[in-house]
Length: 95
Image (cartoon, rainbow, N blue to C red; front, side):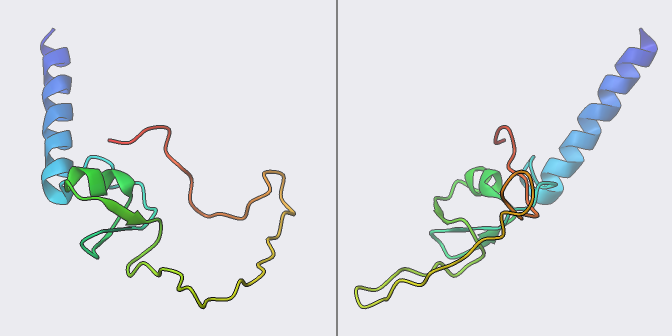
């Protein structure tokens, strides 16, 4: 019983240290996003933890298309089995 309490205490302290350092429980997952305050955050969960609104799914600044913008064709390499060459993975859930 004492060992279990010690393990629970260590887990609690570790979690609290990570949260206090990063102010976000999902800080280990990196997929940069930009908030409406023009701040880049590690991921969408950290935007929510900071009580801000997500503006775009990449580093700041967010670029908005103008009325005079022309469309540009982009080709993707679908050579791998998933069809994407993305170094980031999406989390199953947010903080």
